[in-house]
Image 1 (tube, one colour):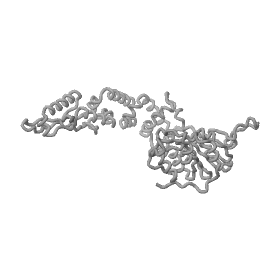
Image 2: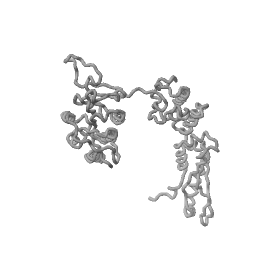
Image 3: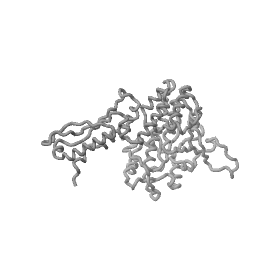
Image 4: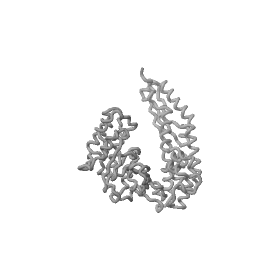
Length: 423
């Protein structure tokens, strides 16, 4: 069954789609609050595909019905039509719509319906609340949808900005800002918008452009990052009972501030190996070796923690993670900050030896190549990524037989350091 001749011709739906595009880009909300001279996206012209001259002559009834529908929609919704005349042969010249015009933002808003109108009212209220702050008004007009999304907390964000402007680089935790209702989750939820508000309001001297965090950029303090370590009791600074029956395991487990780990001198306390694990249980249960310190990498955070340690070059670094695409990706990132890292039980032989424990990796990474991997590791990644062994195969490190773990972690230093493959 052939499609009707009018199937590809523009309708009111094309006009609404154009209005939606302008809405999604923030043009409607922004230009609702600008003068006609300031507007850059209205009036907005929408091309209407339509009949050719031959169609007008052969299908005049369909053309007339289509044009009448557009005129009705334009009249109802407030937009206007631009037309041209086309020859219809013996029927003379006929007027045919070719463009629709959304002349103003209110017209586009009317096309979009009630939900958009509600958000427009919310945005207008937010602009009202920002009166007296040109910088906040500027940010709001630049990011109208972000402001609407944060509308419930917008007055608090403005209050935070006012306080920081009076107390630049305050040196306090965000929780200590004396504004009623402020809490760390609020700041975390709206960090991008709050950053823009502070950037627009504060002088350059109150902003550290090189800081990699919100707290560093604007002079707040943050709680010290903590990491989980396992090692000798005396290395971790923990007292141990002298009663043999109460002495507990050989390995102690403790959370340390990252700054304390940075200050550690491993050789001075008899540590020559740092074992980094992807999962917490593996760190807590790794076989004890007096000269080994175990660090829980907390998944993707391993590379950032290691990058902060100035003494990595003094110790052997080993990484033990899941045998899956993300485990290998983490290994690659770790090697970028610790080029001498050695993987533990992250190879093809270990994978095949535990087939009964394979599970599905929920969201594997699909990158074509991962930096920092050796040729063998890159090949294992390719096999897993391409589902050569099955659908998204994954071996979690907790399922590896413990006798294999003991053997692997008891081996001495390698004869040579691993060499990453160069793509």
